[in-house]
Amino acid sequence: MSRVHPETGCRLPPLRRDDLDARGRAAYDRQLDPALGSIVGLRGPTGIRLHSPAIAENAQAMVRFFRTETLLDAQTREIAIITTARAHDSQFEWAAHAPLAAKVGVGDATIDAVRHNRPLDGLPARDALIISLGRELFGARKLSQDLYEQALAHFGERGLVELITLMTMYAGTASLLAAFDMQLPDGTAPDLP
Image 1 (cartoon, rainbow, N blue to C red):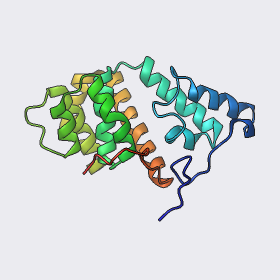
Image 2 (image 1 turned 90 degrees about the vertical axis):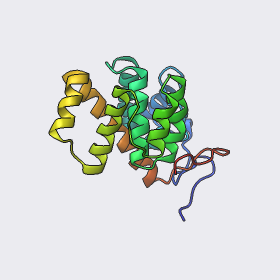
Image 3 (image 1 turned 180 degrees about the vertical axis):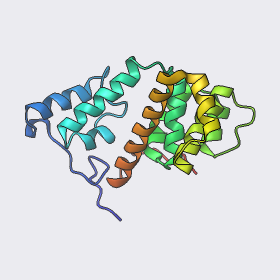
Image 4 (image 1 turned 60 degrees about the vertical axis):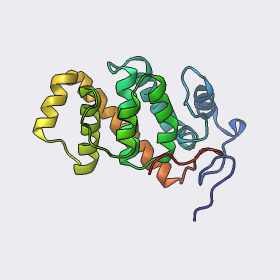
């Protein structure tokens, strides 16, 4: 059993803004900006990354890109994120993004298919395609030519690059959370089987 700090919910101790250098304080402040920061605040991947302000800055730039500049709509993004969370059994990512997926209009059938690794029959074609991409990418660690061509035809080159980059970014976050034993917030029950 790892030693988890009650304040951070992970193995790392909390950071105090005043103990950081100028770059660290700037990164800290940006993370707390509701328009730019993390959807879960400093308890989670953001708080972990702040232990290296340069990583926090660069990760935040990617998050900002996916919120404001990507070709991918909110439903596509959230299906990709929950598919990635499920593939990595990341309870923390799932707890943060499954409610957000529902909020942006992802159907209950899609969320449940991801949660329970169910067959994709009857789901909207786009949803099934995204889930299939994630399952194959993270399961087989490659994409078949057929699935690649389907995804390319649907999303285009730029869209597919952005989709796969989003999924692999969240796969990295799942690994970060696992390495530092990030716990769910108090009062949040695990929702993945």
